[in-house]
Image 1: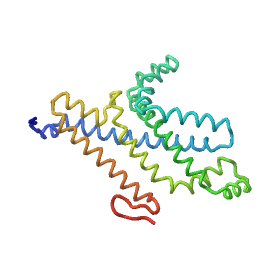
Image 2: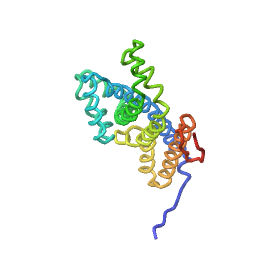
Image 3: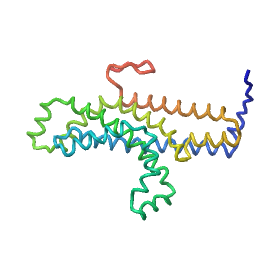
Image 4: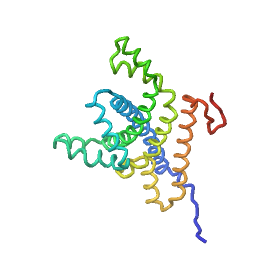
Length: 240
């Protein structure tokens, strides 16, 4: 039988505790930034996909299909390794020397991936608004963008929020993918401590607890702020 000597004291050593705290804070910051960017990207794509203008609709449809059929890790790697090489040399060099570019690349990669899925959620919510309200907006002289911002989005947002909340939880969990570009987030900190101490189980269990706690806390907060009508939450409350 395999015997493992747990040593939880390594988590309290100042250098390792600092790595874990910094990694956790960076994970939360990355999730917040990527989540906000993905919401904006998803909304813009959804508006373009519901536009009557084919020149906006078809490129948006193509972009969403391409992004959804490529792993999220690819987009993180693309923005970090490939994008600087596609830009003019001076711009690419500036990105390579920018200390925070690894964070920016991670945020853009996660935001693009999540934005494609959010655009589906938002588009489906928008098309449920009755045609009569659309016609009334047109009769009032509203443009397509005014109709979308003043009529479609406010009415459909409540029904969309439970699904959007699920995608935001995915963003939080997908921050662990950014260990591939050496972003010093929680998973990276876990690997560093394991490589130094050869005590991977303790720090891995702690990281697992942080991810689980963060995901459940986010799910609880979003379910309270944006309850789904007629659904029972994991905490036993029923919203009608």
